[in-house]
Image (cartoon, rainbow, N blue to C red; front, side, top):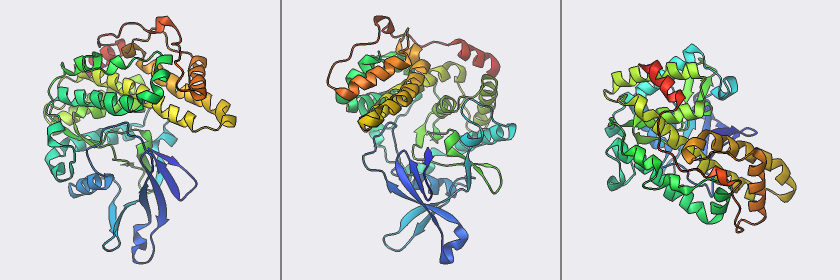
Length: 378
């Protein structure tokens, strides 16, 4: 995801991009983006490629359409830059929760089909995850995601944010090796693996000025894994209206099955499990990210920041309430108070908002929305 700053700078979650005009013999390339790392960036998602350029270069060799070109500029100390896609993010035209046009939806379905057709072996030379840690089954894949969130997200920040999670009624047991998400992983249908974008949402889809088509950017979280995870991530982030979500599911199943037989197996049964994980992951990510934001806020600006933090965290808690076992989601004011108390002294134990918020963690099952999706896809 990229956030617009006064040009010529763009700030992504992992890197800062300098936008510059190509000059001299390179002028025909138009504008370019040169990356530099953001210091102190925290990881909230697994990564199996050293850099986005490796993924884009491989995709270009395979003929993937509508992705940014990568250029190497300079001699021995050459830097890799991206072609700048002139246009605006889809989110500016179709905010989350709104429907896409039929043409836009068709392009997204086509993109999923192209990803399903990409042979994972083509990325073996740039795949950096240790072989012994690479999942071989869909169950291992989801177990790995849950383990990453437990060990590399929550555990890393537990010392500074553990009491904040307690104040919000969020229990880390949901991420346990024998918790509801892990038990769901043991029941997944087997599917062949594919290349996944890993972060396919409205800010990472650019409506190009030149042709009005969707171009896909920000491949930093690309993975090799279960294609159903890419679909769940997309649905979680896009927030389609229900009717259009059902249409996408039907068309997604048809195209990925045609390009990668078996990729849509168990769709109706397994999609709710991945969606449950995405909702839980968002809670742990947003609570920690907002803690970092609040901690860096000046005292004079705290009253302005806390409502923004409460809005984001409350939204994540509402969407994950069922799998988290929250019978009562903390109010905006309760979330603000929890962060304000943590800001004053993060070492002081915080009291949960209400005993009723700590219901037993549920077994994962179909929600009414999932049953509607099942009927629509059948």
